[in-house]
Structure formats: structure tokens, C-alpha cells
Image (cartoon, rainbow, N blue to C red; front, side, top):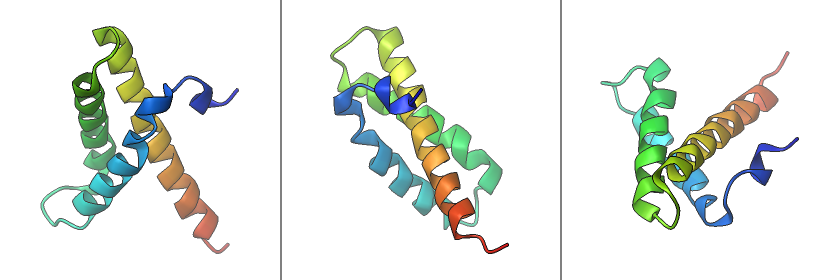
Length: 84
């Protein structure tokens, strides 16, 4: 089962947007790394709601999904680059 099967096609644009926002947040000194996924979750939900086109609950679910894809993708990249 792939999570991307559940993400509405026009919401996929949020994945790179959230990734870039996460990278900017990571470079700040004021926000701890452990807060980045929570911030991206909130931003993903807000952006998805602003995009509209569906019911509010579906937009919230889409925001959660694109945030999850972003954080998972980031972790897969990090883990893939680690040397054992």
C-alpha cells in the first residue's frame, strides 16, 4: 500500500513546498529539530485548507498526508546517506 495513492494529485505540490520550509526552519537557531515535523504538519494542513476544492475534513486529511510524505521522504534520504 502506497501513501501516494491517497494524496490528491493537486496536493502533491505541497510536498516540495513543505520540504523547503523544513530546510529553512532547520537552519534557524531558534527552533529545535524535534519541533519541525509538528510545524510542517500545521503548515501542511493550513496550505491544504487554503487550496480548497473539497470538504474541510478532506483538506485536513490531505494536509496530514502531504506532511507525512514530506517527513518520511526526508528521513529516507537521511537514512540512505548514512554510512554504517
